[in-house]
Image (cartoon, rainbow over all chains, first blue to last red; front, side):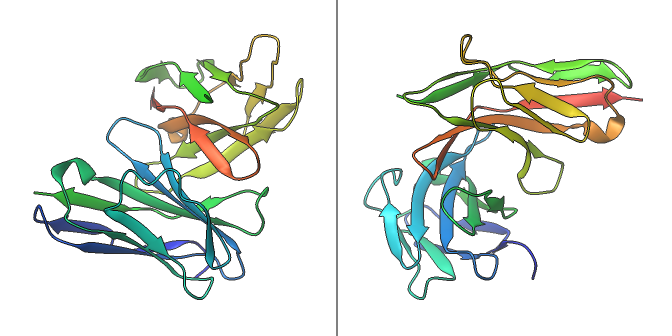
Amino acid sequence: GAGVSQTPSNKVTEKGKYVELRCDPISGHTALYWYRQSLGQGPEFLIYFQGTGAADDSGLPNDRFFAVRPEGSVSTLKIQRTERGDSAVYLCASSSQENTEAFFGQGTRLTVV
Amino acid sequence: GNSVTQMEGPVTLSEEAFLTINCTYTATGYPSLFWYVQYPGEGLQLLLKATKADDKGSNKGFEATYRKETTSFHLEKGSVQVSDSAVYFCALRTGGFKTIFGAGTRLFVKA
């Protein structure tokens, strides 16, 4: 597709379960970003990839959160032992280079019950 | 640390009214400044940007001027339309990639 694709669009999981959120960036974009948006707030930076490597993961809230991008394209955000406070919309964005416009996907709405 | 503060919403206007959404920032160095828009059911989109002091970003009738002396980047539009109803986010970026967003301002435009 032409834009950033995120799947699933909605995910409901039970407290304590493991979830994976997928992001397909725009083809050819080397930079990929994950953000988390809580209700009534702006997006909060989680992690940034340049190619396959995480260039900055300082926004990950704790070690339950992990992200990978093994082939420099698709990325997966993984959350272990989910907690109710993890409920939010998780946004992915990509850009062709570090300093160019980032294009956002529509997000995955995660609800932990 | 770096931060963005924008006026709380919701803002409700009648069609053709003048719009101002205030945004101020705190940053070390010389950030680039952005306004993003999120229409209902859609992803975040870049609306406009300015990369240095006194630059004016503009798009779709919206404009904002990078004011270093007041650390502000207020969004304005002379005549809003119902289709402008959305959530607007002010944001800054330093060091190349990490973008910091404000909390967002919801705009409702009534016909």
